[in-house]
Image (cartoon, rainbow, N blue to C red; front, side):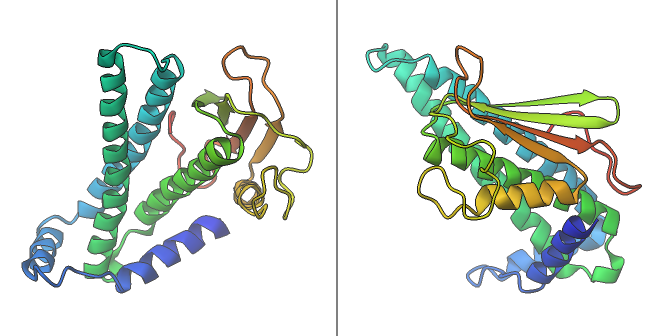
Amino acid sequence: MPVLDNLVDELIENAKSFKWPEYSPDVREKWARAVESKPDILQRLGKKYKEQITYFFYKMDDLGRYITYSRYDDSAERLEKIEIGIKKFIEEMGSVKKGGTRISAVLNLSHPDNVNRNTLLEIAYYKLMNQLKEVLANNSIKRGLATWLKILAVQDGSKVTLQFLDNGIGLPNEDRIFEFGESYSGGQGFGLFLVRQIIEAHNGTITAKAHNDNAVYGGALFTITLPKKQDSAIVYPKYF
């Protein structure tokens, strides 16, 4: 699986030059003791990283739904809840970044030959799915002017289907949107091209629909289909 293998190699290389805080030299020593005393620390961090990414996108969906049903003249209490929700969303986004930093810290202290590559493949997989979601979310919000994005995941036999729905302006050209240089709002036309290349490298497919037949999600619809299992190292979970 070339894409994930490349991500694993990139993960290891970046970890070699990981920057430890100069103002607190004892941090590295603490991590070194943790790595030495807990042989499965990378697996633990990988599981936590997966949970953080999953929870992050559920929170994004909840926040979007709450904001969509709010109005500028809503009660102060409701607006305060939105403000709290935004702060929690930002915190979750920070947690995902910290999760990646912790993994880099462990790899910085571990010899690559002693690292279970299957664990790294799973971490790389979730990192990849996170990147795909970020690209589609950014396109919906920045390009499609959406204020609400919903992500659905369904298992069916040997495949997993992900759908990204929004309430934006839709797509002007659903047939060409994945072509390099094709942008529907002044961008460089590289993001969705890259998304398609990654998904097809995993024996999956992605399609786009200009508009949904949905009263709430009337904007664009992206549908991604991936095999649940591609090799003995990676087993796709029920939810992302």
